[in-house]
Amino acid sequence: MGKTILVAGAGHGGLAAAADLARKGFDVTLLEQKAEDALGYDWTDIFAPGALIAAGVPYPSKSLYTYKENMTFFPPAQSVMLTQRVPQDELEIKMERRDIYAHLIAHAKRCGVKFRFETAVTAPLLLGSRVCGVYAGEEKIYADLVIDACGMDSPLRTALPDVCGVEKEIGENNVAYVYRAFYARTGDFEPAHNYEVYILHQGRKEVAWVATEPDYADVLIVRFEPFGADEVAAVLDDLRKTNPHIGTTVARGGQFAKIPVRQPLSMLVADGYAAIGDSAFMTVPLIGSGIANALKASHILSETVVADKDCAFTAESLWKYQTGYYKLLGAGYAAMACLKNACLTMEPAEVDFLFERGILTEKEITITANTTNLQSMLKLSVKEFVERAKKVCTDKILLTKILRIASQIASATALCAMLPKAWSPQNVRKWVASYNAFFSRKQK
Image 1 (cartoon, rainbow, N blue to C red):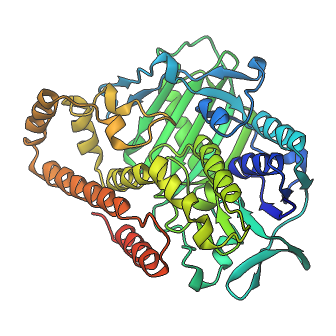
Image 2: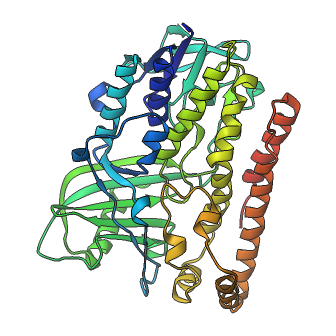
Image 3: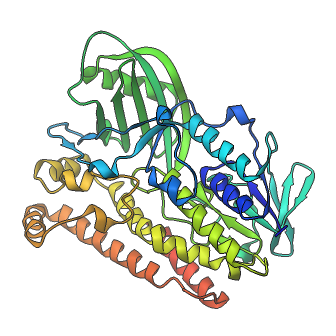
């Protein structure tokens, strides 16, 4: 084919798309600002292994991964607990992030992808409103198509002309600020549950987990505003009250990171441009997992590019990528984002009520990277629905909130169903404006 494709950033979806397109005959180069041996955090990641097959990527060696354990969730008062019951055939794998990168890069190299590490992409190279390459500092690098895998703060997406219609800002309460470290274990204490998650920990908009391994305790802290070492120390002091095996020596990790937790990008494509992974906000809003989604999206993108026989790579010819992604995943996650936004309005006492009265059960907290919509979460019979509705009715304020949440979810679902199936500039602009306006409203 000979057409030149640049992949900006070594995101998981970008790597998989690069590999598939190179294998199919395109001239693919991937630019990454970090050195090859510096990619990834010093921690494990969890994702659905079937996404590798969907992306055309071979399974890693069995020595590189284990299976994720079920999580046990505690409400603010820690008065009760709920444990996931993930079916055996839906178990996710746990793998070192650096091993994931090494696996994807090795596969891409075998497929013919050319790599330029330590090359920072700084801005899109434009011809009018068409992306025709990228700037790497002062260097201009031209391409027929640019795939943006630079991450949530992508210097490409955020610098596109307004006429492209691609959303630039991530939005309020849509960033999870994360601290994660693996602490050497101390003493002989054995927790009752190896994977404990604390919701609205200490009454704050915070989630914390303690995952106990034979040699260390994996501690993660998530907030919706930046925090630092002093706040981490305070959280650890509290966690050690019930988890005295958390030592004081950081065995690995110890980094802060940011993760997008919001609805998918409203416009994934422009002339000469397609966004994937965190650049397109492809994480599951409720849990922040995005590797599987990006891998699945890479297959849709690759198929769309190959189907463009003229290699025009316009927003019109790339539109099937957007419609395909929304049909498979995006629409479900847009609705799930409404639930995430609503969770941020919950008071600790309300969350305790949901747990203690059996309104929230093990079914609903069994969320995995295979959970692509709310229907797959809320598998309620009519009898179960009526019984829980009666319990909610005893708290009028909470009932009002839940009814409002249901209305927002229904609206988001209906809005995604109206995504234009065929390309029409006017209809697409109208839909994008409606979608962005819906999610920009304050949810109380």
